[in-house]
Image 1 (cartoon, rainbow, N blue to C red):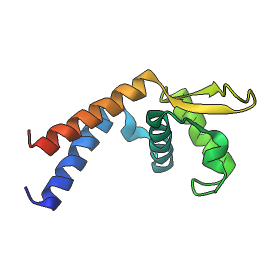
Image 2: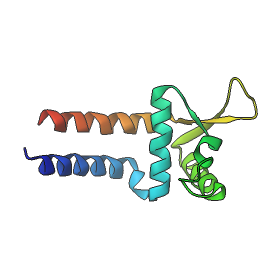
Image 3: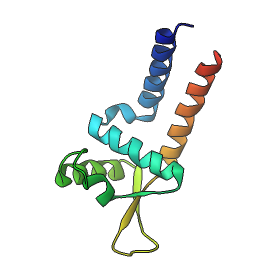
Image 4: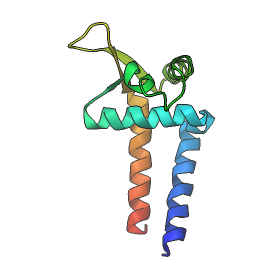
Length: 115
């Protein structure tokens, strides 16, 4: 399989899984935030809200808070109290979100194997 065909095949599969899971209803900022949160969650180092607003790359604090509130109300993320600092909230995926990311990963792996 040519590289470009392969990339588009993976992209199509991920878009199908996104749509089935309801991720296609999220705007680009919410998806980007969700991916950052997922990366931290899977690495075992959950991000804080401050981590996402500190450098301004994801937008202004009110914009980020609004997107996080939407992700939380739609059941994609949850905020948990930091064990070391009770004032800090850590952002974690919900079980639903973990299942969706697991399906996306499985679909991509099958595509990589050519099945």
